Image 1 (cartoon, helix red, strand yellow):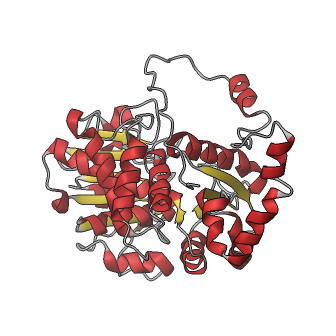
Image 2 (cartoon, rainbow, N blue to C red):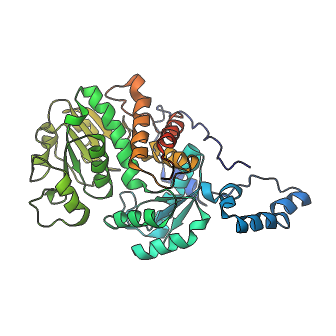
Length: 401
């Protein structure tokens, strides 16, 4: 029996004509009772069906798995099941709202996995913020699933948690708030640089936000060949002269900001080619106006971008947001379904930098045929995206990783 999932159904085309505002009643009614259910893929209509699916037939399968644990990969759903895990400490732009309040988001993430990646997943929200307890919990229930999507976990704990889980679990693990954002940002920047006619490696990039997403975006851009990246936190640019930096911020102060820029957005954005916002900060228009000609602005905070798109367009050649009601939506759903599907299809034990770079390239290539200032990445509802990312990621897997 094959354990591969069916190809994801093609999502509907994005309806750009839909202009009616979404009402509270529509939102709450669509979430009532939750957004998920468990489906049955084998018939249970006769006594014979029951005897095969449950007792006594199921005992034969259980005995076989006890004798050869590898059979669990092909005769249960575990190896194709993604655990969507959160402690509710960094949910959307809402902050630390706790596990119960985070569950609707995790249900939504599972719905996206199924719709766009053809993968089953299960939301798991944990009533603890202790890294050791989260790891122990997931290690103990690990036989139930085949991959872990960490979601909405606050920095800096998310860095340690992801690193230790990768070491502890023999399966793909990825914190999507970090790496999904970074993959799509790289894809978008790859194409935006082509639109403005600038060499990718020569871009001067400023990233506002040195948390989970900002650090991951910086890492991804450095890996892809950008040499001049300046990270900003609430106190200004990260640089080696700051004595208040520890952990990942201290590490990235050593690896970024080659010109030693100090100060805030005014100093960092003067003459910069690219602004990437992954924080809740606000950037004044005059700071955007001071950027280089042909500037690129990715204001990704939701629901309120760091700078309003209509304001950014007065000074920038390419503008993107994280919202669906403006052109160039940089949305993680372009990446994570295909990344996990590709990793699981190829039997990968890890999600590597090479796999993430392959995903970014696949996303960027899909927009190349119609590339323009208002089209640097495909729509999240483009049915080509998940299959292309899946294939690219699977091809990038090195046996044994």
